[in-house]
Length: 95
Ligand SMILES: [Zn+2]
Image (cartoon, rainbow, N blue to C red):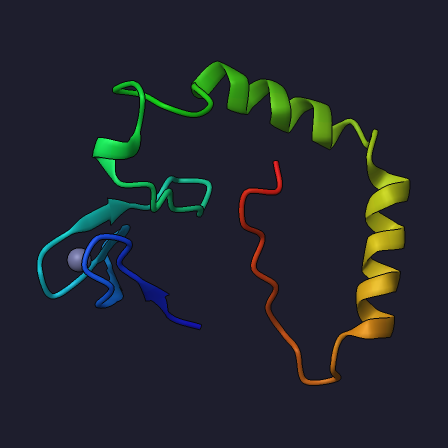
């Protein structure tokens, strides 16, 4: 899988917790592993999205197992409908 720079549409290359294109646009990878590719000038605040407390609250909620049944059924559906050699799924803006 490859990522494309949302600013200049060149490929993004991963290095040291950052994704960077040949035009030096860079996007930091969060310690949780995700990367936000929304350009800074499209963000409505200096710190858009969820803050640290919101991320921790979400993690705590998810780890409590409230979505376990839905998760198990989603995995079953994916296994039933994805091609056999599929190994990765891209989750974009699904909340
Ligand atoms: Zn770029």
